[in-house]
Length: 380
Picture 1 (cartoon, one colour):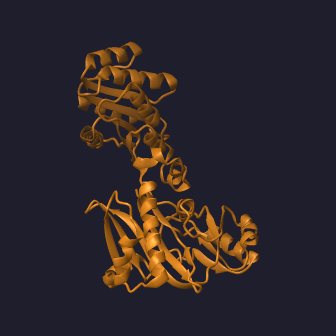
Picture 2 (cartoon, rainbow, N blue to C red):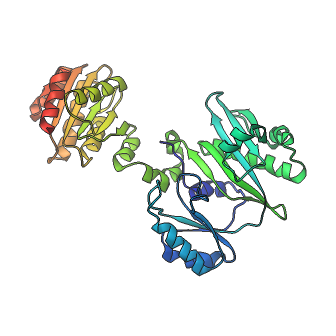
Picture 3 (cartoon, rainbow, N blue to C red):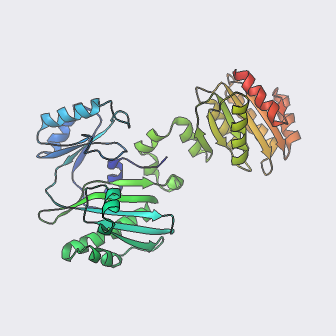
């Protein structure tokens, strides 16, 4: 699942770094539309905040000229129920622009070369994939070492290849330099402006923002962590798993699954299906998991409303059986009304772990198949 953020969130990042932006107001209902228009005035653009492209073609971006028209269009967009994104929850009401020229600008991490790739095209406003397919020469590409400071002069040759000259060349080189810095400092995977425009007076303006964040860098960016796009992308269990640094994938079954190691976890899911059950999640606590991590994993798994029983399958190498048992019991004590829990425990300190569980009243299996058969029987 790509960590793409809403346009207004991407613009928030750009604004923090001083890029040239228009006045805008974010609204969450049609009732707020008139006040938003009154704050901006003149010609405004009503822009639905969704994570998919092609908004203009789908009637999700509209140019309006009055408060009443702004309210009407906002109400129509909020009422739409035919979108694959689901209902629109937010609209950006933005100042209109006197557009004379549209440019595409983007910087991304190129995984194939392990470098930064900056791209610029004078055919902005069109989907860049379409330009790449029909007229690849219209896109200038500049590769840079991933940790380099992208200074403006580094983009001159690419801009020259497109015939960009004078003041515009300097502005676009500066913008590419800024986007490179933003991508690096904000730990982003992609930053894209389409279109970046020049007005009739050659004033530069950022009209759109497409930004992909890196979830593994969230600990350095608390503002990214709070993005609505992230909170809406993941369910509560997934967010809790990310907080606990646990590998978790939501599935559609009724048996909560906890295991250690990706291979064992996948084999567990397969065997559950083989014996007639279905897993509600894939959850890998990893090697050397602490009691606290095991406790968090069980809390997350039991917290899913569709889970009717939990299977814990641990083959301990660097993961200690006694610590797994301690984490299980701590979690179960905090939730006395928990669903049935079946444990298979073998490996390092397994005897100690089995004893701890037994003293609590929970018998652990040492073989995999009997444990899986038992949990499927409990659910069925």
